[in-house]
Each structure stands twice: as structure tokens, then as C-alpha cells.
Length: 342
Image 1 (cartoon, rainbow, N blue to C red):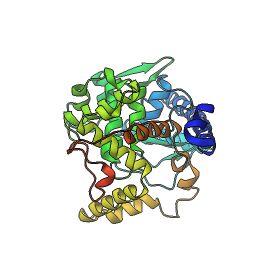
Image 2: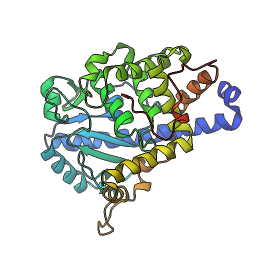
Image 3: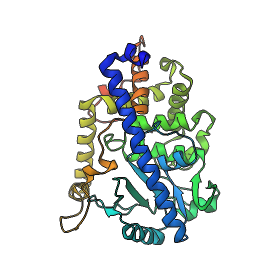
Image 4: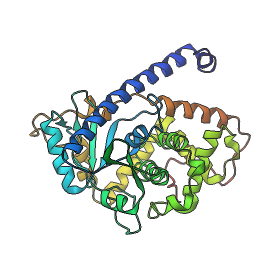
């Protein structure tokens, strides 16, 4: 606290500590709900692949309060997803009033407000078959391992978890950072010790979304943050990617520009009405649905770990004497966001 107070002031230090306590409380709720999901799946002999925070938490990569999470993501087969969804409903979970998508069912909400998404395919992540990743393809390819004491629960390896984090934060939610903050991706790269990861191995999972250089740029940022080294030495591609992440999390105008760009893209593709219906959820006829804002998924607390990384990065970037001519900040080019593989 004294160091935080020196660097952020009393009000800023108190805010960060309060946010950290919120993150710890939410982590505890999600952890308890995850165990319930695992128990129900075990009774039905359903194979689960844990994703994102659930995988990091269950494998011990992150500790309580280290990483914020809004929901529990698990991958199951399409048939098992329907069975597990129904069994969780019978156990007291309620549907959220946000409609399901092409890759997951309608989210469920526990009595404590924890949100659970049952995915049957993964957006943007593929194996050698060029098809979206599934439980069967992941387990068959040998890129998962079982967790101790629960043979039906699988956790992907480091390279796959990094690939999924990159595609989720910098492709699927590139223009909607409010839904998934890009700085959270770098938090995961630090936790997963991305300096030991292989860019080529990661790229084979996300080759439709990124080129190898983009993956290398993301890994470079993660390595620099983990080592506490100067961000002024980042290559232009890595610097641009970090600038986008910082602006998306701290610059309201840039965030609005990203969302406006997404709406224009949806309009051009004739998908705006469909996306609007999906955002506002199922019609009122869905009796007993839980409002999105009352779940952990709709929480508004900022992530303590993510915020800490942002503060460190901002402080270092301010000390930079000059930027490379080829690397303008993302905030300075809000008319069209640069894709990581641009």
C-alpha cells in the first residue's frame, strides 16, 4: 500500500486495492461454480476441455485475485453441450437473457451470479483439419492433458491456450474491447510464460487470423512485460499492438471508434439487425431469464492485474523519447483499427 500510494496517490491506491478485492471475490465465486460444472459433467460422463480463466485457474497458472474473469468457459461436444446445459438447469442454473451464438449455447447463471458458457466449437482456432477446434479434435491431437482427480476434465497445453487468448482478444474482440479487454491477453501471456512458447506452433492454430510475425509481436510484448524490460525496445509491430491494447483500455474515444467501426462492418455485411438482437438477448417470453447486468459476465469492475500492467506500460511509454516512424499509436489512428496481422 505505501508504494501504491506513492505512485498513484491515496485515492488511486485505495481504488486499486478495492478492485483487487472485487477480483478475488469474483474469482472465488467462479471457482466454486466451476467445481459444480465439473461434478455434474462427471456424473453424466461428459468430457470437458477448460478454456481461458478456468484452464489457468484449474492448472494453477494463476492465483486467486491475479486475473479477473467474467465467466466460466468450457468446451464440450455439441451433443454433450445440450445434455450438460439441461442438467445444470435442473440443478438450479438459470438462462441468461443473452442469446447463444454459433459456437456456444445460451449462457447459464448460477445462484451466486456466476456465468457459464458451454462451447461446442472454438471461434478462430483450428487444428490441422482447418475446422473449428472441438473436444474430439483437441483430445485426439494430444494437445490437452487430464487434471488430477478428474479424468473427464482436460486442459489445453501452453501453446494452445496462448493461441486462443490471441484470437479471442485480437481477432474476435478486436473492435469490441469492452467485451474482452486486450490487456487481459498480455496478462495471460505473462502468466503462461510466453517467452518459452513457440510462435510457429501457436501460429498453426490461428493461421486464418494472424501471420507468424503478428504472433511473434504479441509474444515479444508478453516477454517484455514479464521481464520488466524497457518497452521502448519493442519492435514496431509489437509496439503497435501494445498501443492498441492500451488505447482500447484507457481511451474512451478510441474504444467508441472501434465500436463504430464494428457497427459499420456489420452494416456492410447485412448483419447489423442480427447482431443487435443477439446483444439485447432473447425476447421477454424467455421466462426466468437472468438479466445480463446481474451476472459476473456483465460486471463493470476493472481488472486489477490488467490495470497494473496498463499503468506500468503507460509509465514506460511516456518515457520514450521517440517512436519508430512506422509505428504510430493505435489511439492516433482511430478511423480504422489496425488488425494484428495487417
